[in-house]
Image (cartoon, rainbow over all chains, first blue to last red; front, side, top):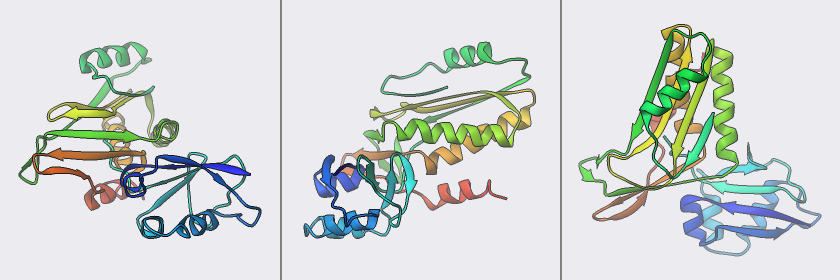
Length: 84
Length: 149
């Protein structure tokens, strides 16, 4: 089962990763489960995803760490927005 | 109507098209945001804007819908540029038509305040000393909160 993960702005730069296909195991039901799995890669993943300002979107809607995640979803991590 | 684009826009032409697209209106309020050439006395050479394709358009559409629910407005036009912009370049245009000026002014202001804190764009400032990501401002967050009541 896989999901797409997108990274934006300084999050992308810190991780040196713009997007990836991530293998979702049956045990992973929430965004937090995915974050934990990514953090297990070590640095810079652990610190970057522990950033208290980290924002989350699932399928292009604002989400939280406890939001559900399922096969085929698009997950995005980004900092507070600065448009306009 | 919403456009996210690299190309510059012509405010006169956008106004003309907004006026043509509007029904029977008595007011058109327009706002343009520009790249400032100074940030805390540091010269800004360029600004790089990125966005989240797909989510940007839907976030802006939701902001427009909120404005339409709150005020009696006719037509809204938003253009937001992305890519590498120079100091003094145009970044964003918001135009709103309505029967009355209060609605047009307020809806335009609301849309800009919500765009600043709710639409997935990110700015990177390029100065003679280097590049850095712009941080979201507390003043922008309180400007958006001002509309909650």
